[in-house]
Structures are given as structure tokens and as C-alpha cells.
Length: 169
Image 1 (cartoon, one colour):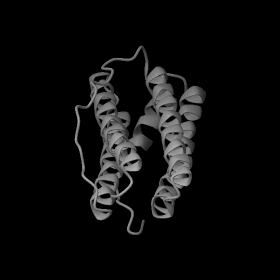
Image 2 (image 1 turned 120 degrees about the horizontal axis):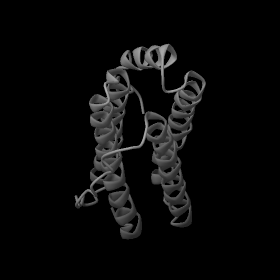
Image 3 (image 1 turned 60 degrees about the vertical axis):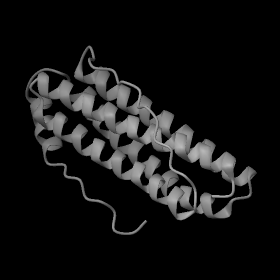
């Protein structure tokens, strides 16, 4: 990759995607510990999705002739005060990732790297979906409350999620 500024930024984002996977695995463990196996499943699937995103960056850097630099992944938070707080943390994290993606798009435009800009558009669309999905869960959790049948019904719904890699990107 001839543009070292973008190469560095893409490598940093690869690490951010791996951190996201690590964070969601930590949340999966938290939900398992609290007896919410459906929430735990949803977070584990989310972790797989984030690993898929990271590998897209890994492959893109390589395809462009760049050098992938894997660096230490920050330790994620381990506990949350409640399931509601954990899901709110997911939404805040996805908003942060959206801002990171938008920053990469801005950098690609500034650097006049059209191929990278096109590559990143998939992630722009993906982040709209990510935030919407988490917002839907958060709204249902607020409606259901954290006690009783509503919570268990939501947990059951979240248990049905499976990871299906996109066929075209």
C-alpha cells in the first residue's frame, strides 16, 4: 500500500474491530454468568461478526500491498451493573465504531484514495444496521423491564441469532 497514512489508520482500525470482538465476548461471559443465555448467544454472535469485520480489513491491507501490523488488544470491561447497562454500552460502543469508520472515510477522501473509500462504504452501511439492531434490543429491554416474563421472552428471542457471513461485500 503506497499510502502509509491510510495503511497505519487501517491497521489501527483492524485492532479496533478485534477489540470489539473481545468486548462482546466479555459481554457474552457476563450474560452467561447472569443466566441470560440468549443475550450471551447474541453477544457471542456479535463477536464473530466483529472478527469477520477485522478480517475484511486484514485482507484489504494485504490486497493493496500493505503490511498488516497486529498490536496488543486492550482488555475489555468485565462487568456491568445490569443487562440494561450492558446493552446501553453496546450502543455507545457501536456509535464509537461508526465515528471511527466515518473518520476513515474522511481520511480516504482527503488522501484521494478512491479504492479505500469504496471499500469503506460497506462498513458505513453496516454501522447503520449495527446501531439499529442494538437500538431495537435496547428499546425492547426498556419496555420489558429487567424482571419477569418480558425479559425471558427477549432472552429467548436473542438465543435464535446465528452468524451468517455476508456472501457479497
